[in-house]
Length: 215
Image (cartoon, rainbow, N blue to C red; front, side, top):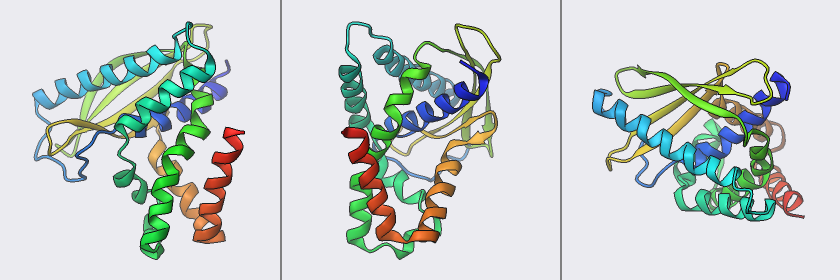
């Protein structure tokens, strides 16, 4: 796989993981500092999350449809879409009615799964190894990983932003692949479409993308 294709596939995989790895009890309030305990917990959380996802992708006893179904189950179990989803809308969020926002949050999990699970299998054989960690603003923990293809080629750097929630559990907030923020990329895409076409056209597009991927 070329470096460009690997980057695109890994960005797609990371988008799915961004939602599926997020836990209940989500809060955007950071703790005062990322302690050594927080850093160790973030690494353990990341390892558990990635092991579970790759175990599904690499299970040769499952058919492709069964693998997708299992990943959907993991996604549905841990999604924090009601909290993360509205943040992707940026300043357009205030233009949504309560009914439109509910339709959006209902659609978003199926949209992410439908659009990105096929591409997850493009990176199922890659190796993701932790290189180091660093903190941001004395609050969040970034885990720096190296993504290596088994068929050779250049490695990718992927940084995963993880925060301990008020509940004590951890959540993945963002992923940067070769310094490209996954969350910001999707937010820019959504905001641009909303600015051009409006809310109803945006919701229709999400619905059509889900239907197309499921057909």
